Length: 135
Image 1 (cartoon, rainbow, N blue to C red):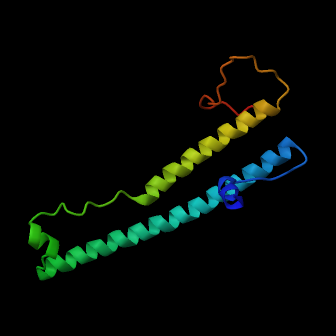
Image 2: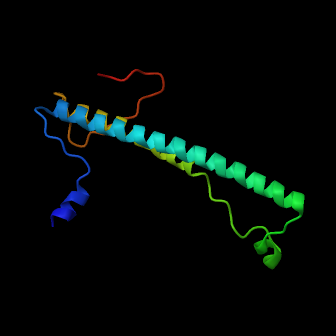
Image 3: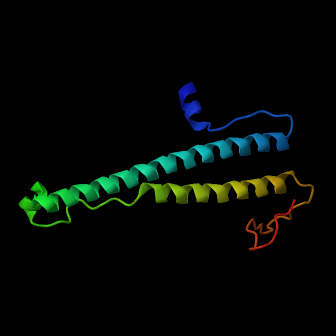
């Protein structure tokens, strides 16, 4: 039972105020995103090395007129499709996480604010380009 609960809790921090708890949450998110960016950089470098190695292998095959076993058996080159770059996908996920974090901060500000939100009022957390963020 305890293991099931531990798997569900991603972050918990008890603080003296909502603002302090929000700050701790945001710090946790920033650290997580920083780690994700470091991992993305390493993945990007690994993909570059793999691409370069593939080019060298292709050049050696062409120089020595070596035909791969798959190509010799099937007569086509489309068997193993190259997967899309993982680093680009990770970068998009990080960007999405940043936008989500900004939206969460704005929602916390509304929740902690003293202004009353009318029932059924439509809330918008997207800033028009060039406008500064409201305090």
